[in-house]
Image (cartoon, rainbow, N blue to C red; front, top):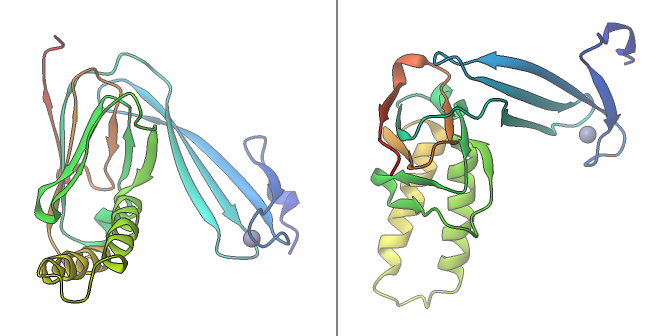
Length: 186
Ligand SMILES: [Zn+2]
């Protein structure tokens, strides 16, 4: 399965770090945002196993401070990309998820599904350490059930990304699910 003839100048490849057999193809393209900004979208894809990964890198710095809201109501919406800068606060009120901004916060490039997966991992670890008779247990199990529903696209919810400095981004799969409210930088 040699696809090297199909490579254009924009594509280059590496050995897959997961299966170590396939070739990791790296595609990139520049996406123009409605506000005139540009983002670089990088896609890694193994031609042998299922390994794949998407990254987003903002190419312009004139990013406005604001509140970005994304409505999730179908499985396709989970693919919307999110770039949270260290000053961005990420919330999913329906699931009780909050990622606070702060100097220790890592840059965070993922999609909605990736956020849910990370959150689920944290909840599972928390549940594992909980005594079986803990009265809070039921609440945590309910959160897990809601997370699974959300991951299957069977739960409507809202992703709110607030960035008082500017720099965070949401790149929606469907533009009609996204809204932006500008806030003044202090
Ligand atoms: Zn692979």
